[in-house]
Image (cartoon, rainbow, N blue to C red):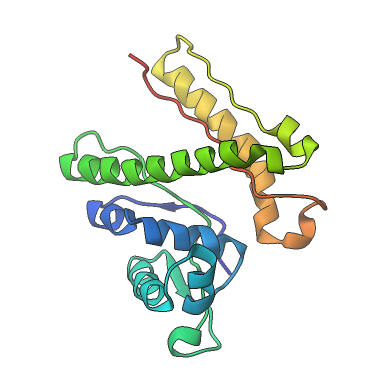
Length: 187
């Protein structure tokens, strides 16, 4: 079972290993539970061979682990941690470059998912169309206040994140919902 504590990433090599769209897609797919390379390939639209390679790379860097009960491409993999964080290291240029590369891949994936929802919004039930929303605010705050807002956001999402661990805790009618929150200078 995955450790529910997000993993803290602190070295550029690990960030670079994560900066691949297939690897990020595999981590997303494994949120629902263990998968074989074949099952993962079906879930993300890649070949089992590609998934097998990237699962091994994710394991090498501690993001996934074998779940037991299989060999070769029929062995299931699971998340080693539920999420990760990569706190900025302002004095480490190699880490900053690796973090920028990862952020670019994450941003591309995020924008693609937002566009996919916008393109398919009319196909969702009315209550989901009404619940989906976007909001942007430009505020004048100090760095400490920005950190305070980010901490408050994490507290709220952590309450809902607990449902990932046990599907029986999820109310009927749940769908995975992505919540975007960014705190960054807009100058």
